[in-house]
Image 1 (cartoon, rainbow, N blue to C red):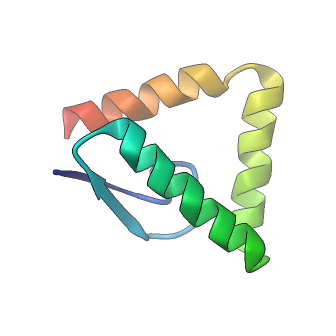
Image 2: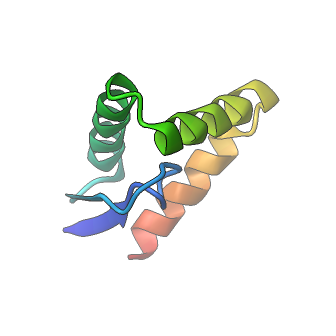
Image 3: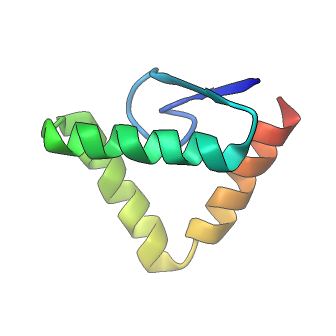
Length: 74
């Protein structure tokens, strides 16, 4: 079992997500992001904006590869 925080996954808090696979960890992080969006949480909204900028710039795939490598190295 490996763990990463919301911040490590591009978020804005120290919520810990744990899983055997990076894909499952990403699903947990996305669910958390949806909850924070619904709660109109300011720091998470800023983090989401930053992720959108990565998407627009075409850098999201490289960012995700780096996060997956970080997970695999744990």
